[in-house]
Image (cartoon, rainbow over all chains, first blue to last red; front, side, top):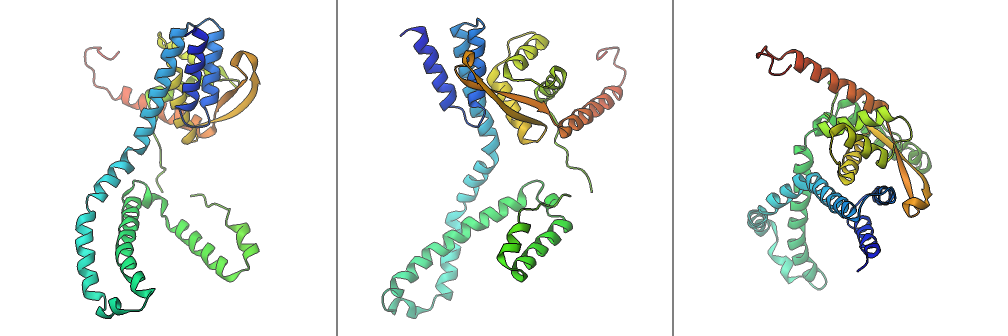
Amino acid sequence: MRPIRFIALATWMVEHLTFGPKNEALSGDLLEELQLGRSATWYWRQVCSAIAADVLSRVREWAIPLIFCAGWNSLYSCWNLLSRAAFAHTMPSGWTALAWPWSALSPLGYGIVPALTFVWLGFLVYVLARPGTFHELTAQRLLWGYRQVSMSFSSPPSSSSTTSGSRVST
Amino acid sequence: MREHTSYLGEFELMILLTIARLGEDVYGVPLSRELSAIRGGDVSVGSVYAALDRLELKGLIASSLGDPSPERGGRAKRYFRVTEQGLHSVRETRRILSELWKSLPATGGDFA
């Protein structure tokens, strides 16, 4: 394989294995450095370190949500037992004797509702436990949110859509 | 209400100061070269871009796309500049570091 093909392969790698809007500028910078006299070895070293830096950056960015998801999912078996016990008490025995399609829909709801509740409960716990949530939930912002909701209910859709884009500064 | 401040890492601070020093038309190549010259060793362009990405997400720098050029294989340059928030963050970091240096006990000139 000739060096030019190596360079083309490295350029393809930096443009496709790194994320974000800056990968074009990054590959352009590396090509400019190559034009200015850098070696192909330097170019390859830079490409590999750029991909590694990008992967590390993404892992660091998503590490906490991923760890939380894994931890929260490990609680699902407990949640399933609890929800089944709760549903067994609340579900009327006559549901199973209903005519189609209700007889098919009731077990579907019996399985899906607890799972969806678990997912949304996890989302809520994560948002509330996240640092800075209570900083963002100031009285001024809550008041602003209440005002937006009340305006959207009281005014026609055209006027409410113009106010929805505005932001409050704290 | 207490202001929510995000502190700068060493490399991020170096990048912010280098952009401020080089002026308006700063893009990856001169930035990496200047950082290499200051640090006395080769700097990975990828790690510079990873730090630039973080700084832009924090609102400390802003970027704009230039025109494509043939020596870059038709790829455009991305120019960076420090925002007002970035300058404020640099000043705040300098103030904190200065206070920490001043508050060091006398240890026989180890830190001097």
